[in-house]
Image 1 (spheres, rainbow, N blue to C red):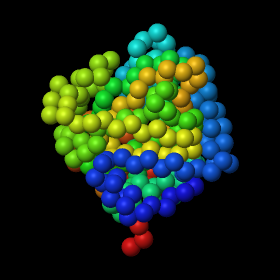
Image 2 (cartoon, one colour):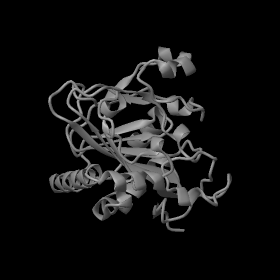
Image 3 (cartoon, rainbow, N blue to C red):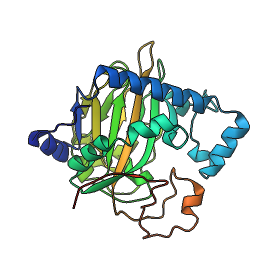
Image 4 (cartoon, one colour):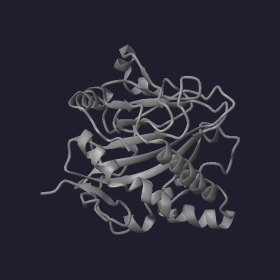
Length: 280
């Protein structure tokens, strides 16, 4: 795993809001990530319906299902196969995403002294899958931060043809915490931020085993998959240690929110594990 960063790369990340690393995992590591994540996704999708229903209930609502393929004919189900929080039920996935080298990389780019994992998710865009429309991550989440970092690890080459990521550079410094929901309409974000129409979107193609990392407040999207093969990626979201709850209900088990009050520190390692902290 190549986690070396130059001062120029760190500066570009902080200015643009995203960074592409073409060589991140070596061949052996890439094969391990493919094997582990595919196994975890297959396990999740193969759950008995009653078990799946109980699993969903643990996380609070039908809108927060831990996989999105119950109705495969919907637009959203054809954007990608999404499996959330695989590490909660798959030990090898937990081992991979909690690697302290990932945490240190996130902390270095964010400029913070420690990071926790908010969630992981597999995003597999199917052959001829729909586009992912412009959105920001943090407004969905249970904290406010301009230093949260999302890592996107492609298990296949991500190209202009099969749905690589796109960014509106610098918007991580401009966006508010108001939610602009992901819809079928690529233009919706510009209804909330009409001034962004003057920005030039930048694509982020990356080979399998590379890394695209972005500030979780940046506006980003992904094109449709116009090929006959899936475009598979695994993502991990990190947030600075010490953040507090903002009142949003998102992706964590219901039991965690039972006694949680706005302003409480999000620091329970059972749900948001601390993966790296700078030595004092």
